[in-house]
Image (tube, rainbow, N blue to C red; front, side, top):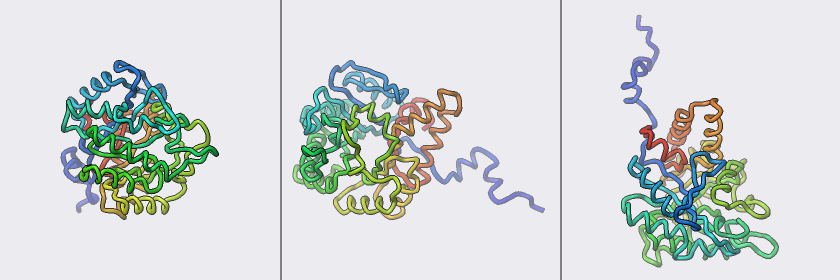
Length: 325
């Protein structure tokens, strides 16, 4: 009598397990975030709450990216930290802003590398919010749209391959799409942070990007973590306005939402494994409680299993260098 249970033979060897694996992680799926600082080209500062990540001046950024490209990096996303901040976040849309400088240098050296530009004002505003703020302290949605469109245009002119608005202002995808099209950037895609929650997992990022709000919080324009139907509405609105890729942020606590977006829309889906997710794994690994590489890879395959096509992860560079993807 055959006593093998269904599938046991297929699990009996590594080669067979690989053959029938349902979800796969590929280096083409991964996007490495970098924090680029305007102050000094040779600046390099470890981010205390994100072990293994750094604030980098332009020269240091080029060195870091070079090592990652040699290891197989295909895509990256840039976040800028300017010397001067002001209420309107003017360095975000300055033609010589720090992200625009970085894009030009990277594309000049590695033309085939996909450069994603985070499009937001929070790193550039003196108050730390993602849009203009009224004298009463309220974020002004509609007047912010023109500045986001200007930011996207400056990034596209510098050579960005993908524009990624992360601000969560209503109508920003349409404003950016119109501005890009009018300037001839018809084929520059928009990767919208379509479903972005007001999450407690962003803390280390705000240290890294120096973008914590000086007052209040972002709950008025980011999503309530309790809501999933709202995520479908937000994604649908961005699709209607012209988004080309839909992102869910954070990632691991919202695998159910990634699956909802995957099942309801035909566009590529991105997931952001945010700073808090990364730092938790790092901290537990440093204490010897978990195997960092195994947990990192398991978390990334979870995004693929949930339906993500692209994953923004701070583990990307290290996993590539170690040959794990």
